[in-house]
Length: 75
Image (cartoon, rainbow, N blue to C red):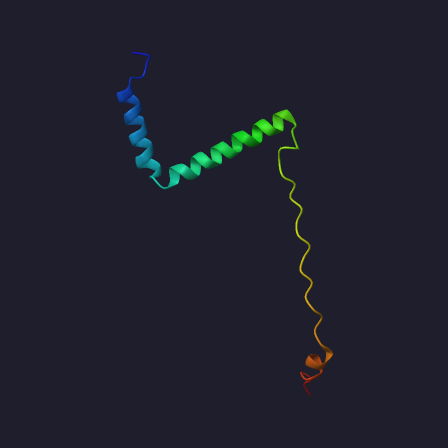
């Protein structure tokens, strides 16, 4: 009575597929895996395994030319 047979597991799997749909399950499992991996890295204190994220410097736009602003003078 306390153990699950393969039939029980098939029923549980069918209910999960019906609730979440076939497309959403891989996304949920991927997120779960990333969360577990992040938790393990945090418990080890291993910062060497994670790539450092250095944001790229903002692209500097060329300054507006003074002739373009002079042409827009309104009276």
